[in-house]
Image (cartoon, rainbow, N blue to C red):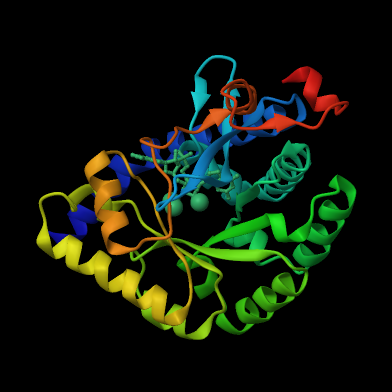
Length: 284
Ligand code: C2E
Ligand code: MG
Ligand code: MG
Ligand code: MG
């Protein structure tokens, strides 16, 4: 019986797997074209001080302006980019664009850029960062790279080495989506992060779950005794923000404070101005 089931499931799966592979391949081809044709775009989401509300910086979030599908979110194409290797040129484009853009900002806010595990596993990454900073004129202290725990776990020894090499450039590193991985505490013990980004899943429950609140309080205490500032992700309500303020959280990011938006809208919103005479100042 078991044997029969297996063969039936093979018959059942083969065509759909085929479709799956075909769709992914088509998307990868389209994505390559998108990169070449300039259909990728960066949106920027503000990160603010919880206590004073002042702007600390922006996180760059990649978007795909697909001619038919419209604005495609990264969750729909980053996996395809990773699987096809396109994440390397895409990641390079994101880093360069984010740094070049932030270099024109006044005041000189920080810019946060997400790194894929595949980029992080590339030996040339420190050189790429160094070159990008030099070519865009962005000060290293203004760049923050965001990594998730899974990135570190691919190869801990190499990761530690890579992290140190990047930090030596003067760039800071944030641990993204903290609290969702397997071994968050162990990671904090072993790796020199400059910021903890508390995953937004904690915020969802905070208003009616004492347990969620207790966990947030404990993570903030942990950050404070390790002297690592904590940013809470996914702030959508005033109540969440008030709670974070009461608990002494350092920074916040979320729809309440600002949705990810194209550069021209954060510029026209008056949050930043571009340096006069900069070529981007005309296009924005
Ligand atoms: P992330 O780095 O954790 O980015 C935060 C995500 O949460 C963003 O989704 C943002 O739009 C969303 N978000 C922010 N505030 C709120 C809120 O208040 N409520 C809710 N429900 N969501 C909020 P997005 O832009 O769709 O990006 C998803 C993920 O894709 C990112 O998670 C990041 O892991 C990845 N990603 C984005 N851009 C890049 C990139 O340039 N390179 C790489 N490798 N990954 C990227
Ligand atoms: Mg991030
Ligand atoms: Mg995150
Ligand atoms: Mg995430």
